[in-house]
Amino acid sequence: MIRITTQKVILHVAIFIVLLLPLVTATQKHTKKIINECSDHKVLELSPKLSFQIILHGILLWASMGFLMPIAILVIRMSNKDQNGRRLKMIVYTHAFLQILSVLLVAVATIMSVINFENFFDNTHQRLGLALYVAIWLPFIAGIFRPDRGSKNRGIWYAFHWLIGVTVTLLGIVNVYIGLQAYNTKTMKSTSVWNWLFSIEVGVIAFIYLFQEKWQYIKQSGGILGNESVRPTDQEASPTQKK
Image 1 (tube, helix red, strand yellow):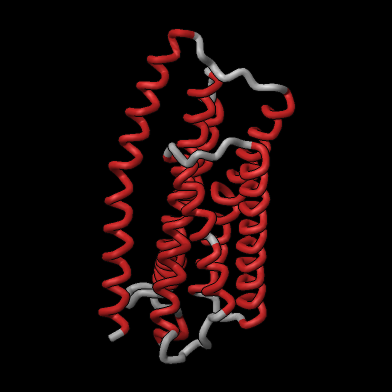
Image 2 (image 1 turned 135 degrees about the vertical axis):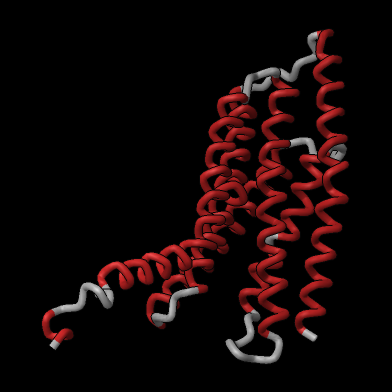
């Protein structure tokens, strides 16, 4: 029963992501159109105050969805193979702290956006940002109502918590890129350096995420090979064994 429910959840998330891709593509086409229309020099001129607010808004959302949430996922994955009770508790507490801090930063960035910016929700960045602000509370609430290990609903809870957390993180990363693109379009200021730095960060996090899958296997393989390398063969038995 749990396996069937988990498969349904995975299918729904996959459908959601597939439906989002045309939205992102349409946004890119719309951005190119706006850039072409900027030939009449209708570029947004920012006051120092507004420029600072936009940059701070971007930094807060990057720190939350582009950094803290991925790190929280990497941290909790360390608990999969750890059997030490004390260390396991520290891992869970660290994961929870990072998630709470991430939610708080998103809340601050959202309040800044509502107070200082024009929010007509007529572009993908604003719409996706609003959806993510609602969705980011789901892993936090799910964590509060976490069932005990070995309980009946633990598998369903784990699948939901993991899938919604990973989905929110991935869409948050996408929205950081869209936000950088929107800033470049409205101000004509280059964001290529920030795009490259963020891409490098995402690449490193993705590498660590994949490496965690194989680390336990690598350690086990190393232990097996190490034991085999020092084990005496029949031809190289010790003098005691020969006697």
